[in-house]
Image (cartoon, rainbow, N blue to C red; front, side, top):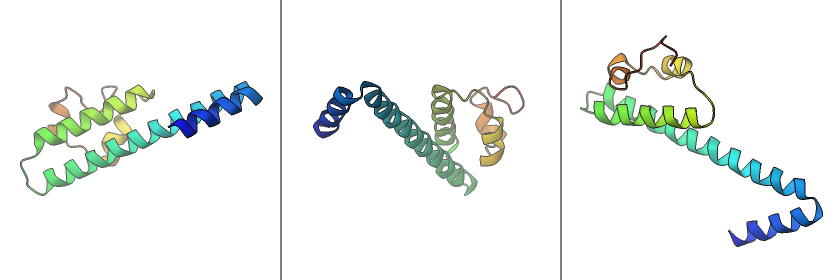
Length: 103
């Protein structure tokens, strides 16, 4: 981390706004990585659930975490991802979310 910090300090001395831009870029990249990881967990949990494994609680937890990640970066509506990922009603019902109700 020291190398990144040193680089950012040098950038700020030359062009202060560039240091902020670099930090903003890093934050956006981390958000994207986190959201992608949460989506992969949902896909895996749903696949296990569909295979007949008793994984409803795990699927609900993965979907809940994914929705939280989406909301943290500003995505308030989940209808499209519910449809795209094929999140079944039994998973959503455990969250209190229903497709078409603003989620």
